[in-house]
Image (cartoon, rainbow over all chains, first blue to last red; front, side, top):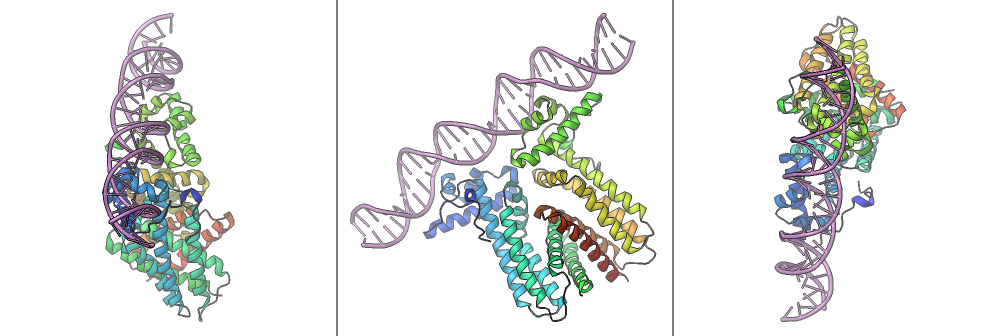
Length: 209
Length: 209
DNA sequence: CCAATATATGAAGGATCATTCAGATTGAGG
DNA sequence: CCTCAATCTGAATGATCCTTCATATATTGG
């Protein structure tokens, strides 16, 4: 990420003292909670501040406006997810296709599921902001990581690796989001996750050339 | 759909004269335009009315509030998409798996793409409303339609048709949304669509039992 | 212990919006 | 042509919200 956020979305200043870091963290956490408890349309600077136990003014010392807060929150979150997936990919260079797929699906799914409340909250917040740059940067990192992994497979070579890879990512990302939004029962979610691996694997097998 | 919208989201009254129908249509269309031109956070009753060429009061004669308007808009749209997919499924009862998958993916994809502006606008509007019932009803219709189609295949029988079907739908719906949101270049979109068919087909082949 | 700097406060300004309603206008049916 | 119901109007109301800034408190480095 760190794709130089649009100037108008940059934080105002970074916390330097310890208490300030605590404050900013509290603000982030409060944002998630308000988002979940009240919904996007009731995500209010006052409400967030109140929940974070600080005053509104404090928030405005770090973020020039609400959008910047949401932007930073998403950036933070996507960074973590991206790190996780990148690590998983790197660890499976040279593995079999089956292992790669399983690792990729699991890494992404788990990263999203681990704090499913945050995931859900952010899926909802996204609408409010111009996050094209964020998505772009995230997609770029993912693309690089998985392409490199796939290319390292000893048992497969793909005619159009760019397309295969783009498809794979769209399918995985999209499916996870769909499952989240439909709020399916836990066991069904787990089943679909496993089926998704199967599906991706059979796709890759069919795409070898 | 017609899943009895939550009472508080029901329209206030239906247009009976011709001019009223025109008005309501204009309001719907204006809503989409405002959504696209200004974004969700600037979707204002006044703005919608202005763009529709009517007064604010008029809109409130048909919808008790903004949410009801968005709800109705989504209902309308999902109804059309559902109809299309149902028809496609019905037409392919007894076909080969390959034909079924191709038909399903094409029907859904085209329904979403045909007026991609509307699709994009509604993906954005969804956040603002309690549309769980809507999604549920839509999912139910789709599930019934595709399950019936798959079950009619002469060349395949699935161990767990419920799971296979749920996976298929989550993957297709999710992927389409992801492609829309990333706003990939047209040719890439077409490529992914075709790859999605391939992928679903190889999944179904692998799931036969 | 004392600047200098970082951090926190929250009432108030200014703006936007959703929603109402009393009254005007238009169409339908007799 | 006339009446009643349907439809439309848009200024006014009341509420909510974002953002600022003058002031107060806390921390750090010297």
